[in-house]
Length: 365
Image (cartoon, rainbow, N blue to C red):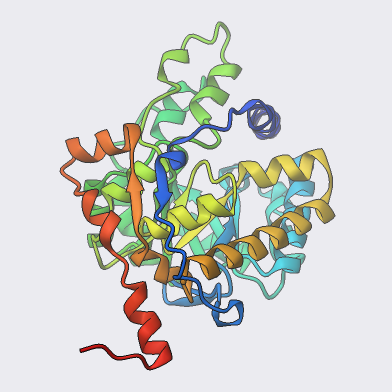
């Protein structure tokens, strides 16, 4: 039954990705173009610092799948793509492994095919400390992801209905494991209050996992007889809204996933305060529609295009994008106004002309 559900998730996720319209809240985030802000391309590096580790890219393959023969093969191909492009990768939820250890290889393949890469094991918030340690050991994982999916669970016909112990369990896992802990939403966003709590609990990275990408409420509703939970499919905050809500908290790294469609969306997320960006649906669709080589080519192309965007914006590193001028409009601006976020200040952050003068040794009275 678990294997069938995992296969169903993949099938529905790919179908939804193919049907998805191109409009998202990321389109309400616009860079102010400064025609003289650009720098030389060889000055740009895509390297970022995440959870005390140095990644060569701000892009990672986010949690997707595992637990069946079919999803094991998908994980193998994802691991190959991660190895060939140098991007970190997360496993899908390992709950199937806890219930049936015979599916271990469908997850273990992530490390077997990617022996030197940055690999994250993924568990749910009900996992015990021993289960979390087992997941880390199986993958020789560099970090642990804990996913938060209450909305998905209530729509899932066989899902959990008890969430009151999650907060305490996250604290136990953070205290009882020796690797950095990432906590991610699965597509409904993290609020400022939630991220502040996660920081205080010792979590290293909060992945906002906003609405706009793979919609697990819709996927689970498609699995229900009668589809009677359609009304909840628009629940939650988008990734840009979540990032703006979590800006300047401090003491915790922020990752952005949920609806990343292009290198421009990656740049937007980084400019909104993310340390790194995770992609799942867009990569899964490429893999399922083509092959591993096509996914490798896509990731390399995105790296090249992101490098170009940083060059034009005058950002030597992804972290420098946090000083780029942004215009926030539409429903995102309304959200910010109601949450007390000063979006006008975001339009006046850059000092590219001063930096240009410093590079050229120009002085003015």
